[in-house]
Length: 384
Image (cartoon, rainbow, N blue to C red; front, side, top):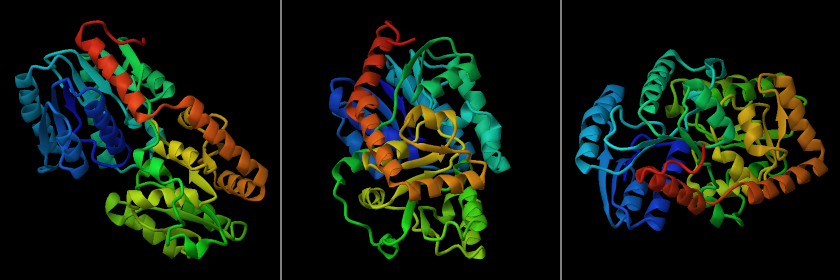
C-alpha cells in the first residue's frame, strides 16, 4: 500500500493524516507500506511504529514549484518502484498515472464549493487552489474510489467533478488529545475573564474563517455585547492578512472583548473548551471541521454558520445564524447568553449526537483499510 500524505502538515489536514496513519499501524501491521510524510516529529513517530514501512520524508524547499517537482518526479518514481497493490492519496493528491488502483480522500472544501464562499481569499492562494482543483479533476479520472468526510461533501464533490466511480464516507473524529482532557483545569489565559461570558474560536487564520466578521460584530454592537469575550488562536505568520487582522482588534479598541491568545499546545485545548460558554464559528467553508466534534465532546454549546456543511455535521446540536450578518451573529450570541435552558439543551444534544452519529478513529481507520483492501483485490468499494 502506497500512501501520499506529505502535504498534510497543519490544521485539520494534519489531524486526519496523523490519526489515520496511526490507525493503519495499529490495525493492519501485516501490510507493507510506502508512505510519503512531512518532516514532522509526530508523523515520524507514527511511521516508526509501522513494522513494514518505507517512509519518504518531504522537506519543503523551492515553494510550490519545488513541491510540484517533488510530487511529479521523486514521489511518482518511488511509488512505481514500490509496485503497490493500491495507492491512497490523502488530501486529494495522488498520481496522474498511478501504477495500481487509486483512492483519493478529498478534504479541502475549496475544491467543491463555489468561489463566492471564499471571496476574501487573496489572488495567489486562489490561483493555487484553482490549479490543485484542476489537477484533482484529472487524477479523479484515473481513480477508482473517491472518499469524502460527509454526505454533503460527497454530494458536492461528485457533482463538481462528475465522478461516477465508487465512493465512501470517511468522516472525522474527536482528536486523541480530547479523550484524556475531560477534567482539564481552567487555563491561565482564561482566568482574567472568569466573570465574563466566554466564547472560543479555535482556528488558524484563513480567509474563509470569517474572523473579520467577529471584529465587525463586536465593533458595531460593543455596548450590547459588553460582558462577552471571544478567545481566538491566531498568529501573524499564518497568512498574509493575519497580522493586519490582529492589528485591527487594537485599532478598533476591542482588546478587552476579542482576546487573541495565539496558537495553543494540544495539552491546553481541552481546558479552553471545558471552561468557555460556547464555540463561536462563523465560517464560510468547511469539509468536516473537527472543531465541531471537539465542542460536542466537551459539551460546549455551538454557535455557527447556517450553511449545509455545518447542519450536516451538527444537526440539531447547534444554534445557527447568517454568517454574513453582524446583527444575526450578535442576536445568536445574546440568545445563548440569556437562555441557560437553551445552552444546557445544546450541550445535551451535542453529546448525544457525538455518541450516536460519529465513530472513533480506530473505527474510521478500520473502514478505510477495508475499502482499500477491497480495491486492491478488485472487489471495489463497499459503498456506491
